[in-house]
Amino acid sequence: VYDVEFSDLSPEEIEARVRTELEEWGRSIGREGPEISYVVESGDPVPTLLDLASTPKDLVVMATHGLSGLKRRVLGSVAEGVLRRAPGPVITGREFPKQ
Image (cartoon, rainbow, N blue to C red; front, side, top):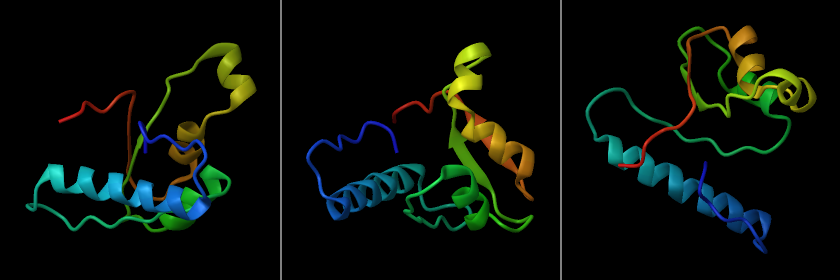
């Protein structure tokens, strides 16, 4: 979740803020269409995402910073790791516009 300030918050407060932001985002999409579920986890992002989206019917939608070259090699790429190993569809975008 982007645009959530985490300074001086406890882990519980961070999780609550992230859940709130996800739920607000989900409501902004509307009620029509498939069910949306929210999971808040911490840890190494690629294996965590792959554990959560472990079947071919699971859709992963994620933002990417779009790094390339040396920065990407040094920092790694969560999006690339998920794209290469996810069993189901993955949609990535550099920026999701605010509604």
